[in-house]
Image: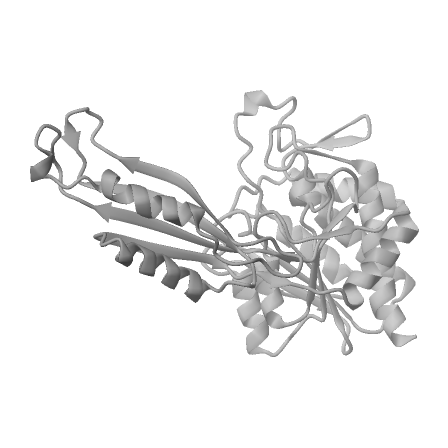
Length: 382
């Protein structure tokens, strides 16, 4: 089969396996078999009910790692889909189904790229690796984080890592993510005293007490930003108080908020600033934190330069470098110290009903991934 036929077949094979996070649905077993057939050593690394694996080919030299996830978000109402979300269908050159863009299409392109590269360079210099998880769309506790701990304990560090997240906006390769903001979540309970609204002197209304400090939290400038990063932002995502009736002062107010923060702020500095603000207002409160991950940033270097050259050759364009959007598993991989980029198909339909990707995009993506191997492994030895 030619490259186009294989990338379609591989994407369909993966998409037909229901793998709603953290389930893998047999995707990784199928991928591992393909990789073993072309000389990869595959190490399964399950943890906490999550399937992961690390695969590597080559004995020495720089490591180029492809990273991705086999889990997908729930499809939502089946009746809202034009076709079954786990029965991939190609219509007018567009492949429909859950995971088409996020990110089983990218995984298919990675496999095709590596097969063709190994076919052309069976004794290639350097090493090629895969870091695959089924816990990216969920809590991300037992997935890539676990594999990174395994690699760190063995002093294995990918020099270059390409994450196949759907980074592109209007057309393939127009945006590449060379960093992401950190994410810090909080659940805050402001405590008062329940009572009758007609006797406020006998109660303590937490809503009233919260108004000024919450306004200050929302309006506060946390930092001035960082090169290629916007300033840190706080967003309140949920707020609740009351018993559902009009004549009761509530006993507590509960809210959730999130920081998306640049390297100009740290986990510790943000937590301290929030506590200091709440204490200054004399609130009684309970505060629970959940840290999703630190920011990461890959400055222009070998990986960025190689990516721009390959995009220029294949697509006739260079990508805009971006640190926007949500979090990704790149935040864990970057802690190993290598260069990390995210490059994948357009993200217009991800997590939506009727998710889809153009087959031509996946064919181009496979060629781009192969081109990066040529640039960074074969080129390294030249």
